[in-house]
Every structure is written in C-alpha cells, then in structure tokens.
Length: 640
Image (cartoon, rainbow, N blue to C red):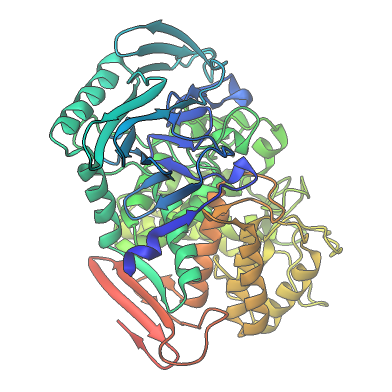
C-alpha cells in the first residue's frame, strides 16, 4: 500500500523526548508533548544572544508521554497529510487527537479531538495541560476574548532594530471532555481547537476567524491535507522493494518540506526566514544553534531539494538576496568591498554568531551560496540573480603572494572548525575561485563590466590550492599535518564533490584515504554521506557503502528524527544531516550531476539490494529547465 510508506507509528514514544515527533509548516512549529512552539522570524535577544522566542504551547493532550491509564495507545506520524495522531483505546471508548500546522492557513495550529463512546453512559476524557511556565522571551498582556495574548520580545537583535510583536488567539480548552451516550449504539463527537499567531492583532484574528469558518463547513482538514497531497503528488523518490530506505527518504523530505511555507497561501502570504539546522521546531535559547541560519541551508539542505523542488531553492536564494545589505555591512566592517555573508543570521540579516572567530574567519559561506546559485541556474535556466557583490568581496579579500606566484586567502576557517585561523583553506580557496569564475561567466552572458569580469577570471585562474607533490594529495591548509582524528568533518574531500575540481583520480583517492584517517570518528552526520558520494565517484563501492550506512546511525526510531551526532548529542531534528543523507542518494547512488546546458546520471544500487531487476529507484517529477521527468533505474537499465 503506497500510503503505508508515509506512515511512521509506534505504541510507545521514544525514551528521550529530544526525539519526539514534530509538526511544522514553515510559519509555526512545535515538538509534540513539549511546552514550546515557535513562529518563523520571531527572535529575542541582542546580537549573539538572539534565539527563537519561546511561545507557550497552549495545546492540551489526551494523554501524557508515560501515562499508564490506557491499555492501548498508538502514536502515528502521517507524513502524506502532515499531521501527528494519538489514538487511545479502552473498554468504554476510542479517542483520537490529530495535531497539525495548517498548510494553507499558515498561522494556525490545529488540534482535533474525536471521542467515540461505545457503551451507554458517561464517557469522560481528561485533557492534559503541558504548556509549562510563562515564556521568559515575551512580555504577555492577557485578555479574555477567546483567549487572546499580545506581546513583544524583550530584546531586539540590534539597538536599531525593532522589538518584534506577537499576537495569539486560541480556543480555551476545558479540563475534560464529557459525553453522555443515551443510545444502545456507539456515538462519536469531534471537537476542534485552534491556536492562531500573527505579528499584528488583525492577522492573528483573521486566521482564527477563517479557521473557524472552515470548521463550520467541515473543510479545515481537507484544505490542509489537499495541499500536502499536492506537494507529494507532483514529485517523489522511492526505492523499489525496500520499505526502510523509502521511509528514510520520505521522512527526510517530510521534515525538510515542513520548514517551508507554501507558495499557494491564499491570505497573508508568509515571509520566508530561512531554515536553521534544527528547523522551526527547535532553536530556543542555548539549543540547536539558537535557530540561526547557516551555510547548512545553502550547502547541505538546498541541493537535496533542487532536483524535485527548485521553487523552494529559489526561496532560499531570494532570502540571501534580501539579506545582501547585511552581507555588505559585514564586508565593510572588516575593510573589504562587496558582500561577505554572515556566518549566522536570524531576523535582521546581520551576523548574530556568538563567537567572533567564526564571524571573522569562516567566510566560505559566501562561496557556498554562489555554488548553490550556479547549480540552481544550471538546473532551471533562471539567470535572474547577479553575483558581482560576492565576487567583489573575494577580489578585495585575496592578496598576491609573490613567493607562490598565486593569489591567497589568509586567516580563514574552513568547514573543519577545529583548525583556525589558517592560511589557504583548500576548500575555501577553491570555492572562492569558482565564485569568481562563475561571476565572470555571468558578466559575459549579461554584458556586465568586461574589465571587472577579466579581473575576476584572472584571480580565479591564479588562486592557490594547497597540494603536496610528494604525497600527491591536497593538504587542508598551509602547514597541515595529517593526524588521526584531527579534522572535525568533511572538508577537503569536497574538492571532488560537490566542487568538482579537476583532480586526477590518483590524487582524489589519496585525498579520500588521507581524510578517512584524519576525520574524527565522532563527526556530524553529513560527513559520511559526503565520503560516500566521493568514494562512488572513484568506484570504491564497498567503502562507499560503509560510509553510507554510517550516517544511518544518526536516525532515531520510530519517527526518523535525526541527531547531529550518532550518540544522539548535538542539534536534533538535524536538517543538515538530512540534507547530506538525501544528497548521498541523489548525487551518490543516483549519480546526478548538473552542468552548463546538460545533466547526467550514473546510477548504482543502494547497499543492501539484491542484484535483480525488481530492485531499483524511481524518481518522479525530476525538474530540469522547463521539463518534469520521471527517472527510474535497476541493475540493467535506466529509463527517463
């Protein structure tokens, strides 16, 4: 049954509440059974203290996580229609609670409780308030009008930026639901509770009113589920005869898609505020990178969405274009021209990273954004973006080294954040060179300043990339010593994929073997996916399979919640790792590559498959330029 692929269920919740399921829609989101919900773009705290503001979750639940009152409980994540369901079954009654963040009425959180009284008499259901203490992030003024709360955050991100407003309308939950069954057959009643948020009272009130109108004509859930089904029906990626892998893929897309507001919202179209490593459901004070947006969005998540959801990737790029002023401010602050994108952003687009070393040295994020832009243009043919500001940053940031007869980048931090500041990070230099070369190509296509474009091309062609001619590999940076476990995560191996630098196969193999030894065994999830892709490129199928399986240790049953590290530590609902995993499928085992004016596939079977024609991968709705294609392959053929 196709629908079973989209269902994750269990009779018990995880022991660790960090791995409880989530619901979100890109505007509002929460972890189930928690006391907190978040709203996109709502942050509290000055500069590096900026974090997602905690909104009390006014939802009430028909059970608590460790209750023993009910003999049979089921917890079900319905990914196809974007909701979480709790089912309780006893001698006298059935109870169901559906919780979802409405996909079209994007500022609404909905709880539907259905009680079936099976026998004559009184059926009573206690509702459990798990909302916890009042939020420290908000100054709430309370008024009894449904119920209505208005608030503003305690601290703005910058002294010059405004305090952010929040308005909340929500249905009053009773302490219990009681039904008297006076018939000899079962009776069923459904109760709908709404929570609406907005940056103005009018918006919050309007969403609540529209939600109640939809309830009155029994269309609220239908509107929501239809939008989710539309999202899935237009595209898909599944693995034939391998339920576990297919569910890993679908749940990965589900958690990513839950962090993007629909482009089809009919009222008050929501603004997109970017995607943080732990998503909208996480990122409070001191946790999950505070809800800030990093390179993770552009380098790890977006490439996983590009083949199927290029419109969402365009949202990401527009988010970066919208924050260009902040990138120009940062470049000027450090004495450079052009745009130097902040390492971490929240509401204003200015850098809110709490560590100055990352702010000053981890500048590869600017090149990572342009790398995504290049892939997006190759995939869609959409040239509506300009890149001269970032190219100008690199032109002013490089210096000429007469000893090396090359342009160099000194005092930087690459993806390996354990080693800094260093001179000539191989990854940073290579990504910057590609940024400059691509900017020159765009300038040529659009008739931009020819002299400036020539300077960009000249710098790109003379950028220094560290190389050890004796050991025939790329050192991570100048004076790098390859010690066991000394590298935090995938870094220099990414010269192969995704940067696609022209490297002899012998050197690429040496890079992979060197950094397999140097990279910490406790590195984050996406490290192993990146190793897997690059090993497949050099036909090391067995070792690629080992690395592919290694990332799966970061998935926590039964709701496929990812953690940053395999031991469950670090950021949770880790969308960065999810993006790396999906890339290992799309760019690894499917072998997808984008080029200027072409696309290619080089498929390989995912580990654990038997070698017969009944096993393979189907990708439905692959978007390329103006085409939508279905691609499938097995051991003997590929069909497009």
